[in-house]
Image (tube, rainbow, N blue to C red; front, side, top):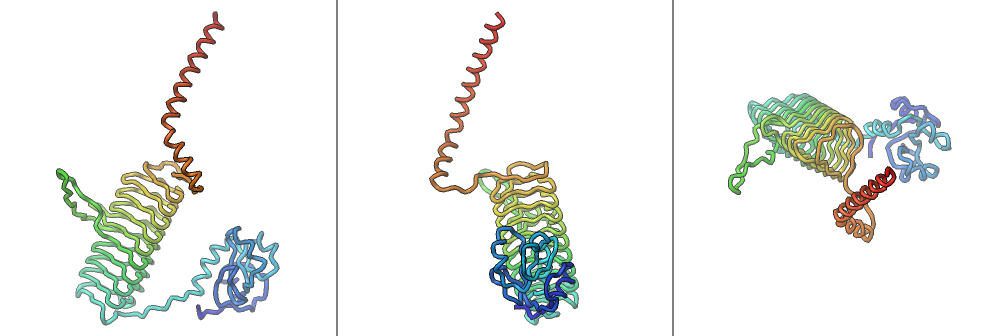
Length: 352
């Protein structure tokens, strides 16, 4: 639980919201509509949860002007309650502060450069030629490879691995277990035997990027793998060698992007999406969950593949019909030819 306490009046000012209620009411945390008590702030951003609004015990609720009209309790009224909740969450952050300095168990190469304001955790390893910028936090047991750079304000959770020649921008957050700069999957076949291709590129990650737990970003084979500014990657995502991801694109868990694929800016890639290699996806594309992208996308919009969930019995019926599609198509073509022949005969008879 956060030790921070704010009044509703203070929160309204900090969030840019209009207050309806007691400005002196104290708020010490955040909670859902169902679980909140009188000293917690809640929010309504999804109509699915409106049924919990009237019965909530929250000290106040972040609401749109329309939702606030039918609510009798205290409210912070704002156009985008979810964005306001996101901002409020930082006011009640529970993460402990990291001590500035280098833990005595850390191993740091003599020629590595670590800013005095950085925090280096227990058993971290920083190799030769690496550079760690101001206010960077490197968690316990992280590995920073040779010549890698971490920009100002970066935060690496415990057990993050950066291979050599990885360039990290400013204010980048990397969660536990992520591996950046591992070798890409590159092999040449010689008479049935696979010969490894050295991966001599690096990885470049822009500013304000977030990378989830156990996500992997492979180094480039020749040129670098590139992640743009503001990109958000969820847990357990696979980014293969030489992939490029444009600014402000967000990608949900378990997506897999094959080598040399280029994804544009402001895209949303839902969970479990797979993309084949060497294709391009333009800006402003939304790919729904579990979609398999097998060709380039050149027009902005929403794209899907596969079928939605249904009962097992209905799925078996659909699968049986799918197996019959080729035969049905051949029969339809035959019927179309016969219809055309009959039509031509009738036209000829009319002319006569």
